[in-house]
Every structure is written in C-alpha cells, then in structure tokens.
Image 1: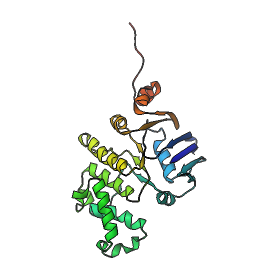
Image 2 (image 1 turned 60 degrees about the vertical axis):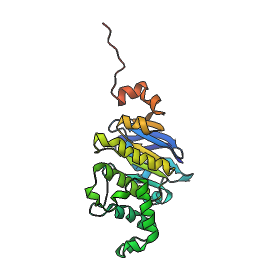
Image 3 (image 1 turned 180 degrees about the vertical axis):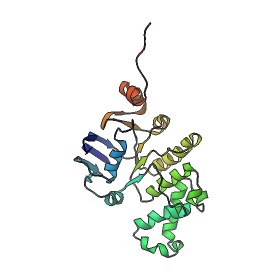
Image 4 (image 1 turned 90 degrees about the horizontal axis):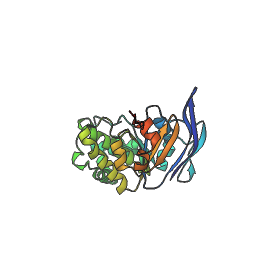
Length: 252
C-alpha cells in the first residue's frame, strides 16, 4: 500500500531523515517509536505532504506521491490526526464529523443551508459515529468531551474522508492512564473493522506491544530495526537506546 524509498530530509546542518525506507501493507497496523528527536514527526510530515523530502520516493497505491500536495494525498486516501487534537470545540460531535464529509463531497459552501436536509451525509455521519462508539454523544459539544473521547473524535474526523491509511500522532497522549486502553480499543476496532491501515507514532510501550502488527524503531533519523513487537522489544539496541535498559551486569 505505502512504500518509502531512501527518504532524506535536512534542516540546515541537521539530518532529520537519513535514508529511510519501509513499506506498510493493507490492513496492517504499524507503530513508529523512537527517542525524542529521532525523526518520527518529520517522517509523518513527509508522508502527509506538509513538507517535501530532499530526495527519495513515496509511493501510495502504486502512485508516486512524493511531490503531491496534502490535499491530493487526502483525496487518494491518506488521513492524519495530530498530537494536539483539532476540533470545532463549540460544535456538536455530530457536526464535527459531518463537516469533513461536506468538504469531501464538495458541499462546504452549503454549510449555511440546514445540514439535516442532506440526508445521505447525515446517514454517513451516524454510521461513522457508531463505528467509533460515539453515537450516544452526537449532541454533546466537542469541548465537553473527555480527553480520550476528543482523541477518538479527532480520528473519526480524519476517517470520515474515507481514509485508506491513517497517520496517527500519539493517540493516547494527554489521556488518563486508566482510559488509554479504552481509547485504543475503540480506535483499533474501527481500523480493523473498516480494513484500513495505520502508522501510529506512540511512546507508550504497553500500547505498542498490544496493538501493533509490526514496529519500526527510529534513532537519529534512521531506522534502527523493524519487526514484530516482541522481537523488536528484545533487540539489544532498542533496549539500550530507546527503552533505557542496560544490558551490563556488574560482577563482584
């Protein structure tokens, strides 16, 4: 589905992305981990089109999107959520999801017409709310939601554009510890149920281990290792540089 080939990006003398290459298959959930400054967010910005690479190629569904705009990538099926949620705080949950549907269908100028007149869009919105377990909160203002539900709503809005690949930036950041698995259960259920793929930046190793099909580890702009979660977590360099676990044993 997604193929990245020898991607490079520098900011001045800083080599943020250094020869990165990997792929994501259909219906696969891949976690992207690494220390602060490893290049994770820069990589996602490159994939979503917010910045352009200095060199390398990005292919999505066999189409070269290296120079494509964010709009074109969205149109092709790449959706993105951000670490800081971007909601219409004063609008209802229903309207937050309905707005990107209006945009997708070229009816954004029709927002001044009572939106309930667009029966097909409302029906689609209600289906999406059901997928993300938000149906019972459709009339609540977005600002009144818990942090966990705000995260879920943010991702539901990205999904509303009929995304084939979701790029999720720390979906559990700011979520209470006791709620993080509930939030991820909802998100991953929707991803699995709708048969889409996801690349998730995540710092919580419990989340990574439980929900990932595969893990990519970045360090100093390069891919250190990738593979199944248990294999990656036991890798010596990952344990030392990412998890901060020393392998040294002092003998008396």
